[in-house]
Image (cartoon, one colour):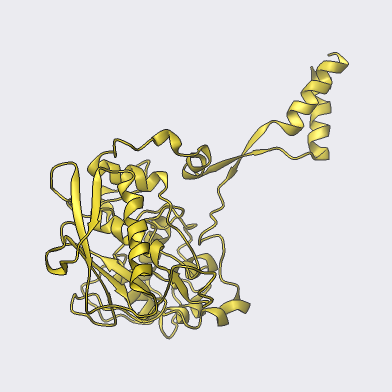
Length: 354
């Protein structure tokens, strides 16, 4: 082999050879709560679950019964007898494994830090359990029966805000602006138009802020627990927890407990249209959102799911989706190989062999 050929091979190998690295999600599972930071989540509804880190089957710990109720509420624990005990039994282990599988966590069957961190996180109140229409290669899901708004395409849906169930921490214009942006995210990819109405009684989608038990069988539980819930088509009910610190501008709202209104609205609108929860952590339809987190851009998983129900907006250009988004959704990222002496030695061995 000539000197120039060897030099070219060396440069190509060290600096331009692609390598695939497994995705590290920037959202939840890769950032377990450090024990020294537990004081920062004392206001979370489920912060007491932090004491269960490293618990495994056979352990009996005071409060495990509340964790069982959590899994039962979100569809992971099916029991005819609702007399939950504090024993980490086979039922809880099975529910935990299903939870880890559904939310893209490492499946251990144990309450490791990543899993407990995810459980503690504020989230949507809609159940995660929608196995009937899960996909083999994609992760988006639909509600049982695959409901959607059954009007002819293109569809126009009206929405209105409850005149009684309101919050005063944000102005009406700020709230309406956040919802207008949230609806536009979905309207840009499907042939559905959303129009605000002043007639709350006759609007297709009815939005309101509520506290505690508000009569729909899904009571809110206080700050940083269940943030909101919405019902599948064509019910149109959209309820947000009035106890939260809702924000539209994190530069102005300094609270550590602030929740981005547009992010939650975008997620819940997905439910109103017929999407259930996904296991893709980067997607809007992933069930959790932490304080001061903004998550409003639809990912490929969100778009493919909603277009499976309604088709594509004729003005939507799927080529506009970035290659980076595609690589993330496939769970890998492309990177350049860094220079290391081990690479150099490998190059020499290859050169001699040739």
